[in-house]
Length: 336
Image: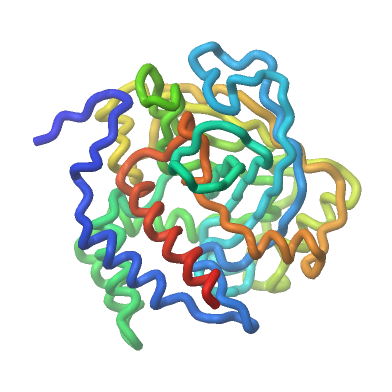
């Protein structure tokens, strides 16, 4: 039995066959929508906006790595809000809501050597954990779901009979009522390295983004009765007149067993390790145009946790799986 250690991941747990199966499932499932090959996940944007990401003046010394080593600096940023499905469902359908943050013109050693990218991406969802603890569990369910005609039933039966914990997280995510993408909190779900690029003397962390305007709008009783793009409409109305502000926080891993790196279905207690604000994301008043240049450019972009400095490299099996899946998804979109 493996005894986990603080700030350490275990790539030796990876099964290349599981990774390849997930790549094949993802690529095979990608279909054109409105003439364009869309993302394999988070296909439907509920808004793409410009923003400013300002590093706090008082970042604690042990967090001052990568972008956080420059207190007071402001990065120009693109933010994409989304629904998590691979299809264009109505906004009222229960699902995870995504927040993808792309910092521009970020210089430094890359997490993936030679990737040629100059951004720092942070990918978040509105739930602190993922339903599936590791790549094997994820692929086990997704492979059933993709069986023609009966996949949904097979996946549901598998979860009901064998994976009650996973089913509970899925139900919790789907049951959330959301009034606006600007009024909810987001979490990274998966862990990341925060430390020197060489990989020693740092920490395993998770990120969260906390809305300062949470609860401003009453939650809908039945979101499915609202217009199919009601989240986009809510974001558009709000940004017509006022900015939206989020606090970007870092949470340290303080217990390798209670706060595992290789199991992303376990919540890291925010009581035992209090998240610390290290930056502020400000989305200024602006016109949100679903057919404009920004929205069009945003849909052509790749938002990827591995678009990162080495000081912020993703950690854990689910992130290592995402690395190969995102690469395959981007390659297929580029070949369309």
